[in-house]
Image 1: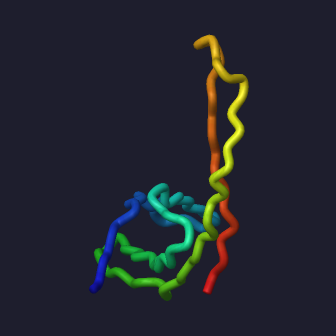
Image 2: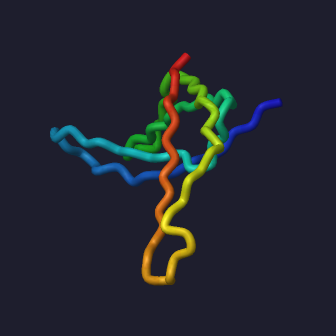
Length: 89
C-alpha cells in the first residue's frame, strides 16, 4: 500500500545567490512509526526534481506527566512541548 501525503507547500525565494533555508515540522507523527520523506523542488519553468527518500523513526514519547500548578486560576497558560529523539535510517 502506497500512502503519499503533502505536508506543506512553500513558495521559493526565486532567483537568488543567497543561501535560503526552508523549515517544515510534520505535526502529525506518532512515536515508534517509520516515516519516509522526500522533497519535490519545482523550478520557475515548471520542471521538477525529487530528492532522495529519507526515513525517520521517532522514539516513543514518555507518558508520565506532571502538570503544575494544578488547579490553575485561569490567569496562567499551560504550554506543552513534546520532543523525541529521531534516528535516521
